[in-house]
Length: 220
Length: 416
Ligand SMILES: Nc1ncnc2c1ncn2[C@@H]1O[C@H](COP(=O)(O)OP(=O)(O)O)[C@@H](O)[C@H]1O
Ligand SMILES: [Mg+2]
Image 1 (tube, helix red, strand yellow):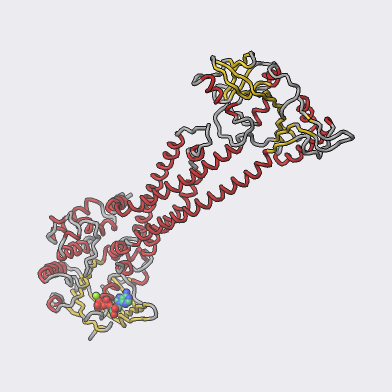
Image 2 (tube, rainbow over the protein chains, first blue to last red; image 1 turned 60 degrees about the vertical axis):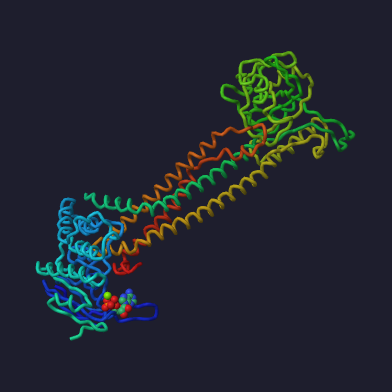
């Protein structure tokens, strides 16, 4: 499902250049639950952003669902992010002026789903994350755990087969973290492909396979 | 068509409208100030022009005089007078003359309604009215050719004379008595500003047809002749030809500057034209600079507010917004905010200008209000302003979105 071959990413800042990924090759099959671990600065987020089509590699090939990502146009990539991949960020990245409901609804709006379908799906998702009563609240009125659950609901709005989570529990207390992990595990059981970055061995234990990154390379 | 996206744009706009209000207000204020500035400047220039041409647009006045040079054995110091026949002679011989009129006047008692006042009474012809911007008020007229030809006893009076004799009544059709002869009032001069004159402002004068005037003042000679050239550029030529013709007739040296004298408003006007051009250029520069300052302010604000939303754009891209959703939203918002701000600025400026124009002007004194209270609203300036500012606003409002939608979403997401 996700095939990376020799992925390299070089960041250039002024005259400095930094190789954040150095030839990463990786295959993740459909329905797998993979966790990525590694010290801070080892390139985990860089790798996740590339997998999530938020960023492009400097070199190497990325094949997603048997099509080369490099060959896709801006709007085709948008469609991939919209339907195929749900992305959960460490810092939630919710729209601050929009309510919980509106944040979850947005990916469906971009997909052109009609009002009735959107209403049904948002209600279903809010129920699933246990926040139906908070539907009209803005992110600032919610706790970190609640915000992350809204972000997770938003990532699932268009029912994507792949869910990417970059340290989803990094900013949460352990109880909220466990709640998020319970939902992720449940989603995996339903057949979704899940890739998750974490620092925490305990959290990583929920996954089937752990990949260790160090200094931009995968440790064998 | 799926209408939900526009509805979503609208709801997002409403959520952010406090932020947008700042831009709307800046646009409103900029539009209002520039339109008012230009309206007052334009109005002032127009009033200057009206005042300047109060005497008549392009006019040469010829007076008699006294010779200062001996000529063909005649001594100097002989008086030279003008006579009614000179008018016809000059008109016949000088084709460059468009209009010509004699004028005689004397200070006489004018009475009506049991009131008596002393005013300068003039005898002249219909052409005088055309040359001297004698615009009648509604319901009246200036002297016409038939008044002269049929020897009608009619009078055209200044609006001050009308007020002094008749108060608020309409004098048209009523009689004024001069030297025991009644003259029917046929028209009253419309109010105007006049900054050049002789014998006091036109508002204080009484005009009679030339032949009727002769019945109350039987001097043969006339005070002056008014000439309007076909082309303003011919005024100097006409002056020379008048001198030559009259010199031949009354036997004086055509180069004698004192045998006859001229008041050539065309030469004055040339100076005036330069001043008006100067004022207009000055106004244009002020307008352009104000526009520049306004544009810098508004576009800066617009850009900053749009730039602030980079992170928001990043989030939307990350969850699958296509380029046209992002750019379309900024496009619509920019156009809407721009239209709203300039619309209210336009409406306010338009109404302020027209309200101010309702204020009365006291034409008796050369009050500053005559220059300040007649601003002129110019649609042309509004259109030019809208185009220039509109393009700049549009670019600054949409640029951050355009740039964000050409890069990887992560670039926008990283923006704080
Ligand atoms: N936009 C960027 N510009 C320059 N360097 C960056 C940028 N993003 C990340 N890096 C660098 O790349 C390396 C990998 O970063 P990242 O992928 O965020 O690591 P991790 O998520 O494992 O902590 C780090 O050294 C980081 O400083
Ligand atoms: Mg990271």
